Image (cartoon, rainbow, N blue to C red):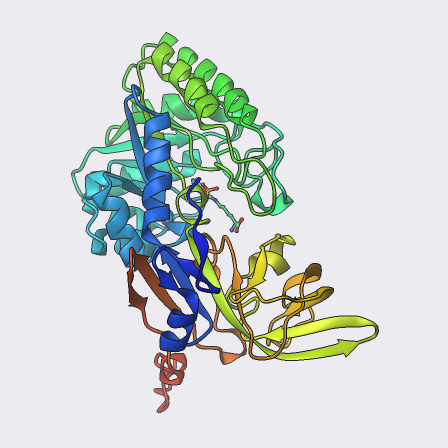
Amino acid sequence: MNPVLELREGSLACEGVSLDTIAEAVGTPAYVYSSSAIRGQFERLDRALSGIPHRIHYSLKANANAAILRLVRSLGGGADVVSGGELYRALQGGFAPEDVVFGGVGKSARELAEAVEAGVRLINVESEAELRLLDGLACERKRKVPVGLRLNPEITVDSPHAYIRTGGKGHKFGIPWDEGLSAARLAASLPWLELAGLDMHVGSQLAELDAYERGLERVLGLLEAIRGEGISSVRYLDIGGGLAVPYEDEAPPDLRAYGRIVRDATRRTGLELLVEPGRFLVADAGSLLTRVLYRKRSGGREIAVTDAGMTELLRPSHYQAYHHIEPVRPRQRVTVRIDVVGPVCESGDFLALDREMPDIEAGDLLVVRTAGAYGYSMASNYNARPRAAEVLVDGDRYAVTTEREEYADLIRLERHALEWRTT
Ligand code: LLP
């Protein structure tokens, strides 16, 4: 494992740069990303898939920072996008359209048309209605479009929170299992579509790899049925994202076992494998820097109020997710049980509750670990809080990749002189 943060001269450092230095220079809150950690994860995954025809499509929803996109692209990765906005970001980030896979449960006609016009590698479709809509849009543009069917394999998986399970019966995602074959027939029969792939995504932060095995078994069964009907155009097997990262003391996923599962599936079918990792590539690489503003006691509880909260990292309050928090300068400190809470006017605004950790005081700089995925990408302006800066570290240098928002950004889209319209 690549230790993302190391103690150097009394302060935690990301690669060769002290977090203190970054906080002094760019202020807090700030997200700090290690390029070597992202590189390391990409290479680890690529190695686990060696010998298998595969493409790694980074899931932008985890973190669409342009510098990270450039890094992933330089490593040979593609992009997985779920909206017109993410498609725009991927293309702006330099991905060629054929390196983009477009998915999502509720793509609008406009978004589908944009994907058709761009000429993405694959559009993963989630219903028969969407297939028909896409066929019409492709016809208008005289473009034959490669589609994948996002199937709901309807298996129950073990992931830490109900909100990040996706492949169970009755979930909004994907084509319900018993409609898979008829959707395949429809896709194969529509003149402007080519049935090019089968796709599943069984969940995120998957605790057990057997979810892939069980999902694949079902999808490959369907592939057999599809081929049995003489439909032979399927060439991609897209198994989505979902690889877990350790947030606390969980074991990391066994990539060799993952490789074995997918190797077996691709060998049996002759398909090219597409994977859509998000969290796995960037979570551990990212740290959130925050300053303690106040310390207080209330009703017998110890409380530290920090300058970051749910607006910077929604995961603790939204999923009761654990993120390790520690002082950037670890002195001799007594251990306390403490609530680390944000400045937002919500009781649900916290980074950790009742956490046993070294005592902290006002002015301390803290680092919240494993914040590279679903941190900035889920950030909000609630309480009119400008979004924080993002910083990329590479060896002993660092660069601001996204400036901290200014107050003026908060009202940039508002009209002051209203143009009233009447019907
Ligand atoms: N592909 C599809 C179709 C997805 O729905 C997702 C994630 C991914 C790939 C990437 O999954 P990953 O490799 O990152 O697990 N905000 C939540 C996670 C939501 C994941 C949604 N879909 C969190 O902070 O835990």
